[in-house]
Amino acid sequence: MDIKKLETWYVQNHRKLVFRESRNPYHIWVSEVMLQQTQVDTVLPYFSKFIIKYPTVSDLAKASEEDLHKTVEGLGYYRRFRLMQQAAQKIISEYQGIFPKTYDEVRSLPGVGAYTAGAIMSIAYNQPYSATDGNVIRVISRYLGDDQDMGLEKNKKRIDAYQQSMIEKATPWIYTQAIMELGALICRPRQPKCELCPLQEHCLAYAQGSQNELPIITKQTKTKTYQYITLIIEDHDAYYLRKRHEELLKGMYEYPQFEGESVYTVLSELESQGIFLDLNEDKSIYKHVFSHQTWLMDVYHAQLIKGIHPDWIRIDKHDFMTYPMAIAHRKIKR
Image 1 (spheres, one colour):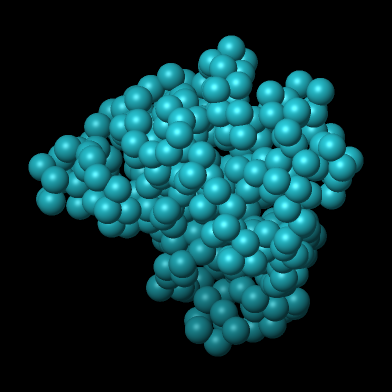
Image 2: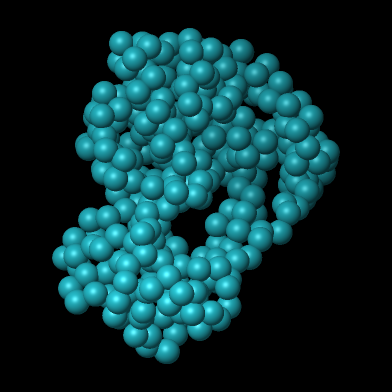
């Protein structure tokens, strides 16, 4: 691979992204966590808001759970931010608030995997540690004409080993960003812009005309679908919400919802607990797709007549928007 040509292309053509203009390891860390399973355009406003609100590791470590969730509401995959705060607290307790500077120390932080650690070490500290994500796998598998299944761990490791051999010959902080940017702008999943690629001359996929077929990745298992009855329950000037304790969306608020297909079964179960609702039988139907599951929600409005469920929290309508809620429920019209 012509590393110099790749790095020169990056210097001349990269997007001026706010988190790519910084070598601050805290900023790099925050951006890489936010970019997990999330598009750059979506991350940009969240990143700026996050750094303003939590300018240092110490500020993040001290944040309340609800403030943190509210700050990242809408980004999804909220577990990553709980782990990020745990990591910030570890940096305060074990590293005197100074972001660690060795790979093993960075890798030991909660929620930090090999890719994130490699990105931090190479971009922030200019150390030769590979950061191999889906974009990088696509670029290198095409460049090498590698038609093996990249859904298999052994093949990902082989690509990572090649990536490591490249970064050891490169300027790490430029190389890591360059190959990421190449995957984002040029070597795209569909309709790659091969005519603009600095690596085109020696790219085997381009030479063979197979760039649109690579990489080969086995299809993921189908997502599981859940059917829910979702209740928007009003009590004069308030709504009832529930704070989730399940791992998915843990710490976020949601409308009370129950797995099943019949609202009357739900009403009967609630009445057996001494909870009575006046139901508006008109329903709305919503669908939300997560990475590994899909929610189909039949949404009903209701008034509370009597009783209260121990998991429900009464929230004044004027304060409703201050509570962190996952997009799956935030998008439901009240």
